[in-house]
Structures are given as structure tokens and as C-alpha cells.
Image 1: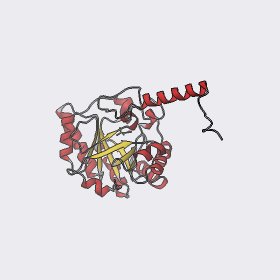
Image 2: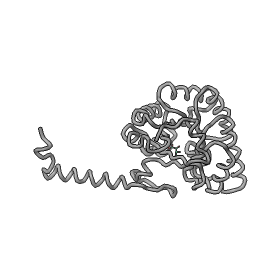
Image 3: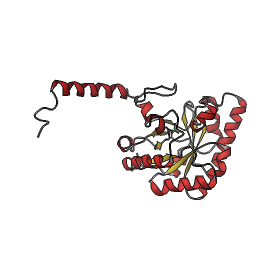
Image 4: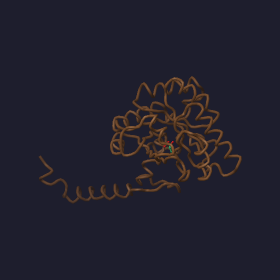
Length: 261
Ligand code: KIV
């Protein structure tokens, strides 16, 4: 797969579905490089990599560290860095944070959670030459104040989400993540904007899909959301391998002469 640009991603709308996966490190980014349309260094790393209960204390330094590692592993992929909680509280804070990401990593774009109320911040950042991905619906950075709940179940919420999507598009975002939204609502949002939408827990009618790598490969066992499809039982494979290694060490089967100098 050749590396995407903002232009080729925009052109994909109504032509080809887009695939996105998260990655947090060099090793897995290398495995994913060129296999999917985009790689997101999501602040979900705070939970599945850092073992925290939510994403809120992922700092910009942490996101930059992981984005560098992912860019090192996936030089042929379009890489997006998630802006963590508290790093885009207003236009200047947001712009300075986004500039740090562009200057200190090779990320192609940044992602910002929020709708119409964040549009002025997105506009400031895009006007300064930084590509922005929007993110509406269920917003993990609002977990402590709002909890996790599926959005777009009522007409009032549908209208708000469509307004949010349009405001984010008008502010200059080239792509929109829709998370935890009723499938029919996500379909209508997708029809209402000209930029591609990427769904997670938002049904089949968005312009593409994103999954968190450790969910998709079956490494994260703490809980499994309904929308996750496991393409590998990674945790079980690793546990089997590590037990075999332990048995071989204890029984003296490892190392053999061939594995010795
Ligand atoms: O942090 C993340 O991994 C995300 C995806 C769930 C879209 O924002």
C-alpha cells in the first residue's frame, strides 16, 4: 500500500473504505506498516499500555515519545498523533501543542476530541499548516465528567452530532472519527459531511473503521467491548509460549548445544 496524504484520504470518500489501527511502539508499528491506510497513536495507550483506568493523564511528552517510536517503525504509513487531555484548552495552547508534535515527531496529522465547541481551536491549528482529525460522539477524555455511553440515540442528539461534524469540517479537519454512536446516526453524520468518517463502535456505514490494536489482536483481556472483532487470540498465544519457555528452562531442554557458543 502506498503512503496516503491528506489529499488521497479526502479523495477516498465514497470510493474506498479506509482502515485505521492504533499502534504505540516501534515493534508493532513495523508489523502494521503499509498493511492499513492509517496508524493512530491513540491516547488509549494510557490504558492498554500504561494500565491506567482512563486516558486523562497521558501527557504530551508521553504521546510524542510513542509517536516517535511508531514513526520509526512505520515510515511508509500515514501516522496520526492523538492530542492528550489538557493540551488544547484554547487556540494558543492547542497550536503550541500541535507545533510540538510536528516539530518533534514525523506525524502526518494530529487528532482532537470535541465538536462545535472545539472548532475555533481546530481552525487555528489548520490555518497554521497542521492537518487535523476530528473526533466526535463518545469522547474518552470526558470519561470522568460524562462516563462512557453510546451517543445519538435520540433525535436531539443526532442534530447536535451533525452540527458538531459540520463545524469540525468547516474548521478545516480532513477526517472525522465517530466513536460509540448508534449505527443509523453515524450513517447520517457520514452523509452530512464531505470529509471521510472513521467509525469505532459506530456501525458499518462510516467511510472507514478503526480498532485499538490490543483489542483487535486479543491481547487486552480486561474487558471486551461489543464492537471489537478479535482477529487473533494474542494473549493465549503469548501465555502458551511463555509457559513452554519456562518448562524448557526448568527441564534443561533450553538451551541445546546448537543454541550455545
Ligand atoms: O485513543 C484512541 O485509541 C482513539 C481511538 C479509539 C479512536 O482515540
